[in-house]
Image (cartoon, rainbow, N blue to C red; front, side, top):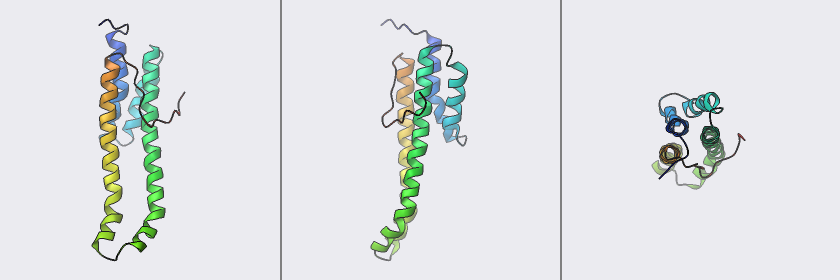
Length: 136
């Protein structure tokens, strides 16, 4: 299979996606690292520009979704706790729901970044699901 993109272009496209995993080590690294790669490499090839924007948009989208969920949960939790019986299960709901949601988001982020990175390295443009197109 002949791919019109050279290996360096595909590697930078992949780096835009996989660098988001730095957020597991560095606070806000999931946005900052892909943003730095995109800003420094976007002029080199339209593919890098496209994949960099896609990665940064996805990471920003995840942050927005988590913030909305946390705000919604903060508003809703007192009402839900009032409906539940007063025992350990209501406490566990209030304490563990945000953690379970956070772990699910992190797993989703990991899987999507790997899929996008592999596709980018194969020279295929990748569009994340549920992605807000904040950067155009």
